[in-house]
Image (cartoon, rainbow, N blue to C red; front, side, top):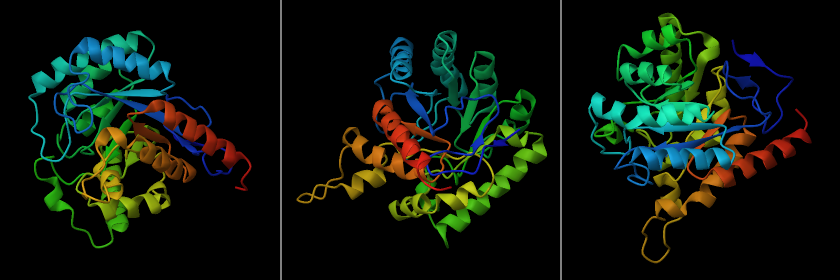
Length: 296
């Protein structure tokens, strides 16, 4: 079950999913994209050997969790078949789990989730919150493993058309609450649930900033919060070239990602999903140390 620590201080999350690390600070989840088309690093770790090497490097840098994904969810991305997704992720999961890593698998498919857990994964990160595959919630209830429910309004090919909100934070929290209720009704234990506001998924830039500024309202759902802002386009737009107006390239957004990491960690985010582990780990350590001197 979810356990609470002493009164929360800035930078120290008080909620922790069952069976995952508890280092006394916000966790860092390193990204391993086994895809040819992810927005930031598609193709760099597409071969299984390269993906395993990248995952091991992230662990050496201090990642608490490595998140292996075989399907790009960038806006406009086409889905691979289930067979192709399995071919991409299972060898990587097996190798990283055998090396002692805490492995998460980023998938919307129940069949992939089940096979990944059998291969040694410890956490399933579902960007659809169980909406893409009706078999996912029952499968996760049977598995009794930690499960991320992200706010989602459709597949990558059309999701940005759904970026219409009254008050984005109120709407996102309300829709996440419905997914939490569905998960509980399916038999998933409360202590296994993690929520993610879904930055960049059916969100315009201003929506992302509002969600980050009001992360406490997401945390009020009563479950650990995962935040994935790393290298996303809203940062590129903020840092656009003042002369040309061209957004900052994805590979050059790590300093901005680190700034967001501090802001999220200071608000009690449980985990940050990032490409650059080293700078984020430094950031959350500093935030936690600052929080130790800040009144609860």
